Image 1: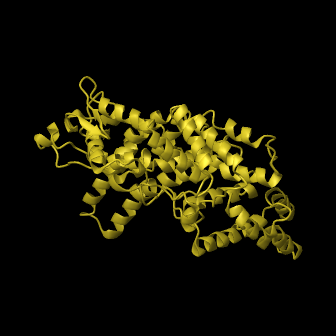
Image 2 (image 1 turned 60 degrees about the vertical axis):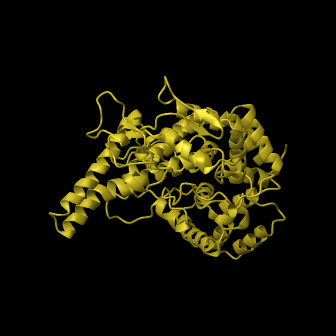
Image 3 (image 1 turned 90 degrees about the vertical axis):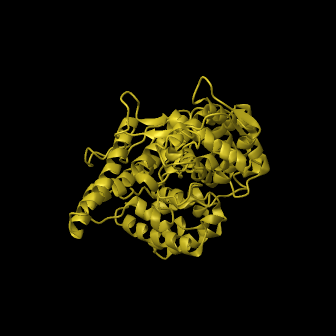
Length: 493
């Protein structure tokens, strides 16, 4: 299907972050998008040429190995405990200075700065921006955010670990996300203890049932409430999840037990549980109950419907065409949740319904789009000392999406209506005015660049184009650039 130039560029904004102003449109945009989902691209804090930044201290590294992640998690917890003990022997000034040095800078700031910076620079300078958009969807679907239990070091590694499962089937992704220590800690399942477990009977712990993960597994990750599950089903899933805990290198760590996820049968509720009419039990395999439950939930028709609708809402429209949802759902069911096929189906629907649907961009997607179209480098200053300078996560916070601090387990809003308000629009306009001012000081041919962008993204009869051209004619290139990026066409895809 042939598309006009501005519609083809709309497609690149919808499934990626647009194309730089000097980049050529692929001959086949749909094939271009699909090709980016065949393998997992590398991720790091990147320079414009796609290489890792070399001006950061050696210790500013993304943690990939589970041992390193859990070592960092335990160190943070230990330093927190020690700091409260030291507070009894220090002045307020000494305590605050040491706490900032040992905890505030490395854990509350740098952990999140490096993850957000890697997320932004990989989206802009990595190998597959379409893959990054789908990763943004899945890391939002399986939300883990900073919160309780000093989990700062677990958030980024959990989100990045999802990438390796995006070229397989949904069952593998669901199992990984549910049992990863990042999720177990975030939703407090590491304290979820069966009332008839040995740990409870012998009073090894004061912990008891915690329904957080059991509820979200049904409500958010798979079936959705429309499937008709009951509170009894939530309680049964919660019991199945008892004993799934995180193993850290603390005093309870047993030699030979890998760090990360740990199934502790002593905290698990014995016996069988019934979920939506099916009995789950384990005799020879202690972990079989959860494995069997995940296998069933992953291919359930209600899960296919829920995920198909959610992906179509995320990429197409708040009220996506029924045919689009049905197509993605059928592909999910036919392939038993093979994610590359499902992702291709979403792209096909984005392409097929491009002229009859539209999506208001979240602050993150819009920000990355503006930087990409203009060729602007994201702020580089790291919070390693008291130097000033913009930070990407602070910009996102000003725009209303302070990554990675999502306030709820259901993730950032995916409906256009949730991001539209006078205040949020005003923030985007004011931010764009500042960015354009700074960009004009270094851009070689700003007027030519803007003319190229207008030609690519606006149809000739678009009234927004006439307004911008009128401002350009008056010599106010800065205002014209601001109008372009804050125009309805560029706010929506």
